[in-house]
Image (cartoon, rainbow, N blue to C red; front, side):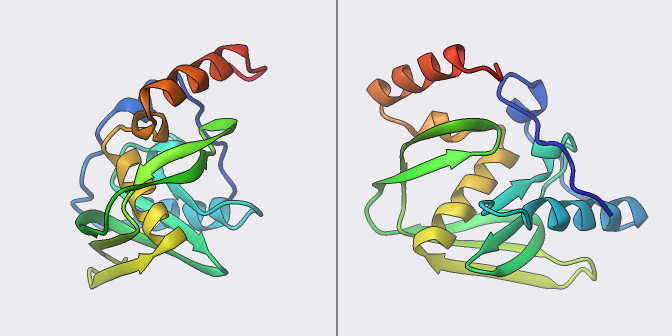
Length: 163
């Protein structure tokens, strides 16, 4: 389909809790194609549906060349002590800070045929699963920063050319 524009910090859709997908129809299939096209650009690890302006529970991922999607994902497990991990976000371009994330995560959802999908992993995959499910709950990585880093990040946002 097409690469979609990424919504930026300040857009209300990014702070809204996304609705579950109730019916898999042509609109949902088109959304998945757009999510996959959009995440395949270099430097992208994941794109949540609300980042392209659609308030439903879906995201795509691109981790080490493994590209896919998941509908109605639920973060069902995290493990390991939370640690600071360098993180950025397409919706907050140009910022890179240590977000607090668990080193292991597991997400359960479904594919376009209604079959269950389980995504589970460590490191970058775990970080992406937590980051993208946060988006679907209306949270940004800025919410996972220490108070000091958040103050710095918000100053960087205010001083950015895109804000």
